[in-house]
Image (cartoon, rainbow, N blue to C red):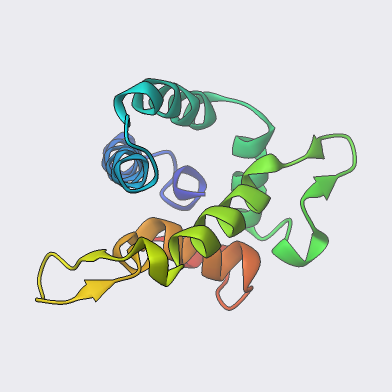
Length: 137
């Protein structure tokens, strides 16, 4: 979505990629005892998404307003866009109080989902449908 909204800006894409990678690595540390086994495959998957694939196409169409989340995650001619349901599943899992972590700026325990701004924004765009796709910026 970011690429379509910033006219393929290399700087914007690289900053967003770095932030996504950071969030995914933090998520692996919350969810598993051996995060190093997941970090590589997650990074590779994210890189592929940024380069090509029907998830990239879906995100670009959302950003341009040619598709909307209301149309669902099964698109004729493209198949199932798996990332949509994954956003919902991860956000809901990471919202569980049993996974609480120390907030980095405050002296209190919080559900991890609140610490991931990109995941939270994608959840509000794709699952809750509270925001338009352009609000990913």
